[in-house]
Structures are given as C-alpha cells and as structure tokens.
Amino acid sequence: MTDRAIEKAIKSDPDAAPILDETWLKSARVTMPEKKVPVSLRIDRDVVEWFKANGAGYQTLMNAILRAYVQAHRKGKPGNQTAA
Image (cartoon, rainbow, N blue to C red; front, side, top):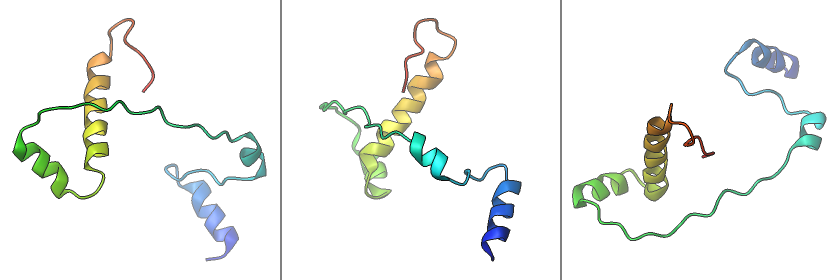
C-alpha cells in the first residue's frame, strides 16, 4: 500500500489510533505509573497455577483483574471515584 492509501484506511477506521504528527509529539508527556505495593497474600494453589500457566506477567494480569473488580464495584458510590 502507498502511504496515502494507508492514511486513507486509517482515517476511515473508527477503531484506528490517530496518526501521530509533530503537533501531537510536542504536546506528549511521559508519565510514570504509580508504584506497586508489595503484599503477602494467600491464594488457592489452583488459582495461582492457572495464572502462571498463562505465561509471564501473571501478577500483572491478576492486578488488572482485581482493578476491574474494584472499578466495577465503585460505580455509583459517591466519594469512591478515585483514579485508576
């Protein structure tokens, strides 16, 4: 595909990320993620084995699932709308 054809395809796709140009790059800011808190947690063996079987990053996946649970249960509760 030519560059023009690629740009046209991107513009016509509502799910495509925008083309990043110089203007966007000048306004971009690097932000560091919030530091994680180390914890000791007892989890059923089969649950841990299932997550580990899905490969590297299993702790990150567990965190993401817990975050989704928290966010789902915060909805509609005043004062509990903290940033993720």
